[in-house]
Image 1: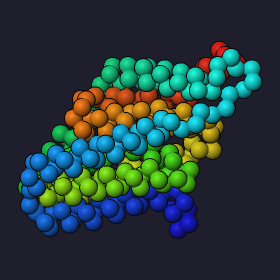
Image 2 (image 1 turned 45 degrees about the horizontal axis):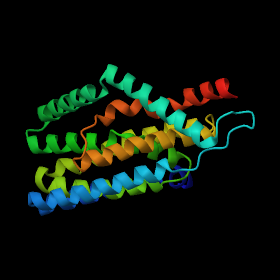
Image 3 (image 1 turned 90 degrees about the horizontal axis):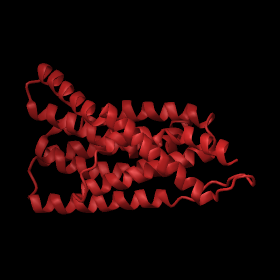
Length: 251
């Protein structure tokens, strides 16, 4: 039990919040006026932007005395290279398109076993919304290190969203909690293995890069941008390579 609370607390809380508030929203079973949902989602987006900016301002790891770059410039270069190359890879693969296809496939499979279209639509929509994104990956890495704060913040955001969505789309939204448990818990388990392999500085660079994507997620929610943040997911893992490359070049 201690292992679960030390390394999976964020995912367990996220699961419980989405399940309980999803059930509550489906019991209320009434649509909120558009002006209210727009206002709430704008507030949620602003919170996501804040979380992203806060993560981006994390102190830069120290660099060796032989390095000709300052710690801040080194961090910026790792982030810029990771975002540029990672987004290029994501666009070439078109991760966003494959995620949408996965959603269509899941919807068709669920409909074949359940005649309720509202259930499948709610389940698929919320599963993708809550599990595909930088916040999930960053949070899983941090949770594996014993810091559930990002996933706890995500739980609040997911809870507000599922409460609103389940009020119109039904109980299927609540069942997305089980997708969170399996997918996000699996990422945390994988990250737990990486924590002992990757250095603290590498994890910081990954976190900072991911925080930039989180900020863009927030501007998307607010309707300011329409960036395909799913295509930026490869950028979260490229600091592993670019940190080593820049150290080789600059010492």
